[in-house]
Length: 350
Image (tube, rainbow, N blue to C red; front, side):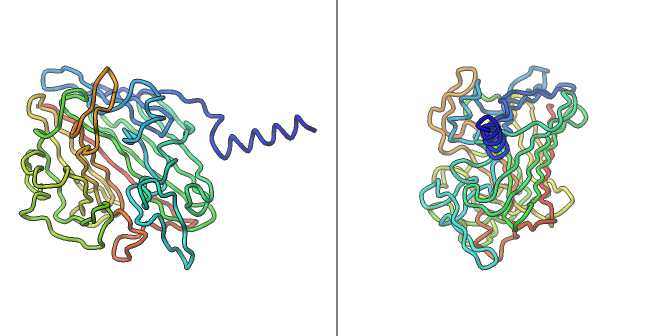
């Protein structure tokens, strides 16, 4: 009887917390593109790209070991959720009921709470080293304060010899719930250990932003950026006007066009000395442009020390704090409905 009870408890523990999953690393390779992952946080740990002369470099910031990701406060390369970005006051109302989420950034919730999707062990549902890998996580009712059980899947796919697609899917099981997943990769197209990204050129196909207060919570406004330091409608160096902002860029851009099933070009990033260029498409309404303003001598992989502005993030997403702003696109997904977030990266070097 005692053995049977222990077995039941162990199975419940595995289902609820994914503790029975072994933490491993995985690699996808096709042509000149090579990407590695771990099922801890469904993290992208490295991405090797050739420059114009064929020299391969790792262009994403990260750590040498999984333990680095376990103790990470930067969200290097992780899938973040259940709700990415910030929830003001760590609370929201849904169908007349108030929900309190984990306040892990002052009085606010950031990237799903203290133990969001970036800090759980995902199972691997499908893995073909030359093609794709699918990670799965079953989020439970009440996790970090969010309602309902949700099944989440993230698939990384290599397409052709120079494209990486990321498909994030989620299905609520028994309750309506907000869902907003994001990939939090830090990019440096010169190489992860080459210094800052201020000389990178970027074009953001977005003419508006959602302004924020001092705690980076949206005010609810949607404002045009033409002529301001946020204006990247034409390509220019990231550092060209960064000194006009407190700390650097950390803002949600409203992607031009209508969000939905079709992918829209979102951003183009280039690095002159290597000739590398990264183009990004997405089906989401917003993209968070972040210039790693808070990195302070983080010990990274290959003995790198990551300092302020060592990488840039382009996190396609729903608008931050949408659960508290009726004029923002809704993030509420009901049972029987599906959440779908697609990103497509195209890498070249000239």
